[in-house]
Amino acid sequence: MKFLFLIQAEENAEFGIEPEEVLQWFSEIEQRGARLIGGRLQPTGVAKRITVRGGKPLVTDGPFAEAKEVVGGFDVIDCASMAQAVEIAELHPVAPYGSVVVRPLSEE
Image (tube, rainbow, N blue to C red):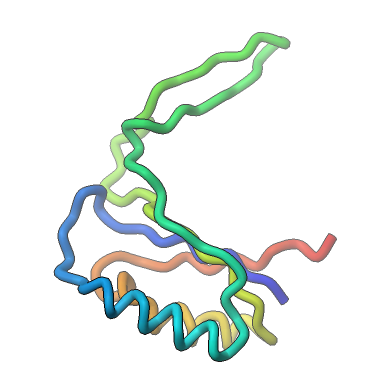
Protein backbone atom coordinates (compact mmCIF):
# COMPACT_ATOMS: atom_id res chain seq x y z
CA MET A 1 0.00 0.00 0.00
CA LYS A 2 1.31 3.45 -0.88
CA PHE A 3 1.22 6.46 1.44
CA LEU A 4 1.96 10.13 0.85
CA PHE A 5 3.84 11.91 3.62
CA LEU A 6 3.32 15.67 3.66
CA ILE A 7 6.17 17.20 5.64
CA GLN A 8 4.87 20.34 7.36
CA ALA A 9 6.65 22.96 9.42
CA GLU A 10 6.88 26.70 9.80
CA GLU A 11 8.30 28.14 6.60
CA ASN A 12 11.93 29.26 6.90
CA ALA A 13 12.22 27.71 10.37
CA GLU A 14 15.66 26.50 11.35
CA PHE A 15 15.61 23.18 13.21
CA GLY A 16 19.30 22.42 13.48
CA ILE A 17 18.78 19.17 11.59
CA GLU A 18 22.04 18.04 10.11
CA PRO A 19 21.99 16.72 6.53
CA GLU A 20 23.36 13.44 7.87
CA GLU A 21 20.17 12.96 9.93
CA VAL A 22 18.04 13.21 6.80
CA LEU A 23 20.36 10.91 4.87
CA GLN A 24 20.21 8.41 7.74
CA TRP A 25 16.39 8.43 7.59
CA PHE A 26 16.48 7.98 3.81
CA SER A 27 18.93 5.10 4.19
CA GLU A 28 16.88 3.36 6.87
CA ILE A 29 13.63 3.66 4.93
CA GLU A 30 15.29 2.60 1.66
CA GLN A 31 16.78 -0.45 3.43
CA ARG A 32 13.21 -1.42 4.35
CA GLY A 33 12.34 -1.06 0.67
CA ALA A 34 9.69 1.49 1.60
CA ARG A 35 10.73 4.86 0.12
CA LEU A 36 9.69 5.36 -3.48
CA ILE A 37 10.23 9.08 -4.08
CA GLY A 38 10.45 12.33 -2.17
CA GLY A 39 11.87 15.80 -2.06
CA ARG A 40 11.88 19.28 -0.59
CA LEU A 41 9.67 21.99 -2.00
CA GLN A 42 10.76 25.53 -2.78
CA PRO A 43 9.23 28.32 -0.63
CA THR A 44 5.56 29.19 -1.10
CA GLY A 45 6.57 32.61 -2.40
CA VAL A 46 7.58 31.06 -5.73
CA ALA A 47 4.49 28.84 -6.00
CA LYS A 48 1.44 29.52 -8.14
CA ARG A 49 -2.14 28.37 -7.59
CA ILE A 50 -4.20 27.74 -10.71
CA THR A 51 -7.99 27.64 -10.62
CA VAL A 52 -10.43 27.54 -13.51
CA ARG A 53 -13.87 29.04 -12.96
CA GLY A 54 -16.41 29.45 -15.72
CA GLY A 55 -13.79 28.29 -18.20
CA LYS A 56 -11.42 31.12 -17.27
CA PRO A 57 -8.08 30.41 -15.60
CA LEU A 58 -6.94 32.43 -12.60
CA VAL A 59 -3.28 32.25 -11.60
CA THR A 60 -2.45 33.45 -8.08
CA ASP A 61 1.13 34.01 -6.92
CA GLY A 62 2.06 32.51 -3.55
CA PRO A 63 2.07 32.59 -0.64
CA PHE A 64 -1.65 31.85 -0.43
CA ALA A 65 -2.82 31.67 3.16
CA GLU A 66 -1.93 33.01 6.55
CA ALA A 67 -0.90 29.61 7.82
CA LYS A 68 1.85 29.01 10.30
CA GLU A 69 2.83 25.67 8.81
CA VAL A 70 3.35 24.94 5.13
CA VAL A 71 4.11 21.78 3.20
CA GLY A 72 7.86 21.83 2.81
CA GLY A 73 8.40 18.40 1.31
CA PHE A 74 6.90 15.04 0.54
CA ASP A 75 7.69 11.35 0.43
CA VAL A 76 5.84 8.44 -1.11
CA ILE A 77 6.22 5.30 0.96
CA ASP A 78 5.20 1.73 0.15
CA CYS A 79 4.47 -0.43 3.17
CA ALA A 80 2.03 -3.04 4.42
CA SER A 81 -0.25 -0.95 6.66
CA MET A 82 -1.13 2.44 8.09
CA ALA A 83 0.50 1.35 11.35
CA GLN A 84 3.79 0.72 9.54
CA ALA A 85 3.51 4.06 7.71
CA VAL A 86 2.96 5.85 11.03
CA GLU A 87 6.00 4.09 12.51
CA ILE A 88 8.12 5.30 9.57
CA ALA A 89 6.70 8.85 9.85
CA GLU A 90 7.63 8.96 13.54
CA LEU A 91 11.27 8.48 12.50
CA HIS A 92 11.26 11.45 10.11
CA PRO A 93 13.80 14.11 11.20
CA VAL A 94 11.23 16.93 10.90
CA ALA A 95 8.61 15.18 13.07
CA PRO A 96 9.99 16.63 16.37
CA TYR A 97 9.77 20.18 14.96
CA GLY A 98 6.74 20.14 12.67
CA SER A 99 4.45 17.35 11.53
CA VAL A 100 4.20 14.52 9.03
CA VAL A 101 0.73 14.04 7.58
CA VAL A 102 0.24 10.44 6.42
CA ARG A 103 -2.32 9.95 3.63
CA PRO A 104 -3.05 6.64 1.93
CA LEU A 105 -3.02 6.85 -1.85
CA SER A 106 -6.01 5.45 -3.72
CA GLU A 107 -5.37 2.11 -5.35
CA GLU A 108 -6.44 2.89 -8.92
